[in-house]
Amino acid sequence: MMSIFVPTLLCMYWVFVLRDNPNLASQFKVEQIVSYYVVIVTLSALLVSHMKEWIMREEIQQGGLSRMLLKPYSYYAFNALFHELPYRIVQGGYGAIIVGCLSLFFPHLFTFSDSLPLIGLAIFSSVLGFFICHNIEQMLGFLAFWLYDLRLIHNAYDTIFILLGGVNMPLYLFPDFLERVAFLTPLPYIIYVPALLFTGQAHSDAVSGYIATQIMWLMVTSILYRIVWHAGIKAFTAAGN
Amino acid sequence: MWQKCYTKALFRLIFMHPAHIQASNLSKSFQVRGKERSLRSLLLPKTIKKVAVNEVNFSISAGELVGFIGPNGAGKTTTLKMLSGLLYPSAGSVRVLGFEPFTRPHAFLKQITLVMGQKQQLWWELPVYDTFLLNKEIYDIPPDVFQKTISEFVELFDVRDEIHQPPRNLSLGQRMKCELMAALLHKPKVLFLDEPTIGLDIVMQQHLRDFVARYNQQYDATIILTSHYMDDVKRLCKRIIIINHGVIVYDGSVHELTRKYVKHKVLFLTFLTPIPQETLTQYGIVDSYEPLAVKLRVESLTVKQVAAALLKKLPVADITIQELDLEAVVRDIYLQKT
Image (cartoon, rainbow over all chains, first blue to last red; front, side, top):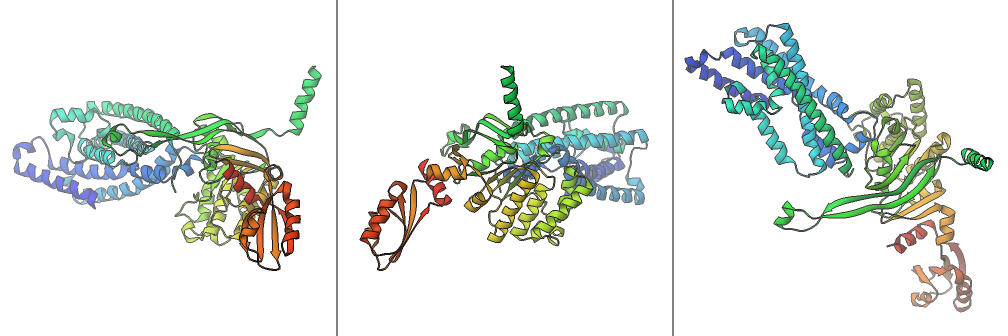
């Protein structure tokens, strides 16, 4: 409930802003804003991993990682596919059902992409976003190989993600400078870009650029993941309960 | 000349088991933060290097069951963790089944198991049998082999009902049985057992010992066992490695350990009349004292003369001379090397 409360408030805020500012209504439509917030909340539940605290506390500090390291499977694959993905599907599934029902009963409030290829690209983009987020979350958890208390770093990351990841508001409402800064990071490519694609708000000539940049960030975060993992495993003391 | 070399190589091939585990100058040290309390330590923390394992060398052949003992903090668990691949050695080399454990190749992990008495492998929320099914898939165990192994273990450990419960509903003893089953489902060739009997009652300890002995014989598995219970070592192991302060202080048979290190014998005396403790201290070390019964430790070389003197000078009702037990020998070794 808490995770939909703030976006709902913000959505209502922008709807009232548009209602009371007719000059803005020519640039932004109410259904555009409502669709954006509904999709961003759903994608947030579906794609955003929350592994870093679990990795820090349960795996590294309490020694749960020892059990994983002695099994003949990939730790990365196990976390992504068997630990995190089921949670995401269940949580996002609820959101998708609610979005579906709302769009049936209030079709005038929603606008989604009507192009099947674009929907397909949006799904592909979502998968890329999931793995980018997963890589970043795991690396932030792996900092526990060297540091004991990571709450400051984790909270700072969460705050920056809410700001630059498009969680609180679409980045096209930001000042140009801030929007450019955001797109220099991988954060908008986790849920913001998929949200634009699902709602049909992405410029058609920018779509391929978005996908290419997501692939680039996935490769970068994957390489960084391997470096951090291999360095961390050497420092791992296998202590804990 | 070539015939000599050929014969030697053939002899080695036939009669000497290849080493399953080989450690050469194996070392592990940890960087520990110093205790300095100052603003400077926040920015430039001082770290102290703590050596947990210091250039240990040993070789264990296929099928050996070795006791690996030492006092708390000696480096036993650290060594086992390096052998199983959990820890990266700071120096030296280690090979297990021909692999470098810290690279953790899947082919290696499928042939070993590490059982730590305090840590669990079972999934806390899942019924135990579901963990077994998960392990079956992870280790690619064929279904018929899986069923046969489960039936064998269930009968051996008598856990027919327990395996359908989650571990949180089981007692410690029941959980340990299930942990061992999960760890051995894939019939590993090398077992690292780190205090597997800790916290178990004596009946359960005996069950576990019998099982380990049987597994070793049946599957010719190489087993390294660490334990603080000398009964585990006495009853299971022909070879013992003692480690203290990260250094191996003894590596040989249990029999040889007693022969090499036992410099004392124990006299059990009962008296007809009470004898003060001060009177007895001149004959040897008083291990336990009651006015009419005493346990006296005497140097092996002089035990005959001391026994004769005691019989002559004191009203002895009964005297028994015994070897020092293994616990006392090991305790003396721990203390000698500090």
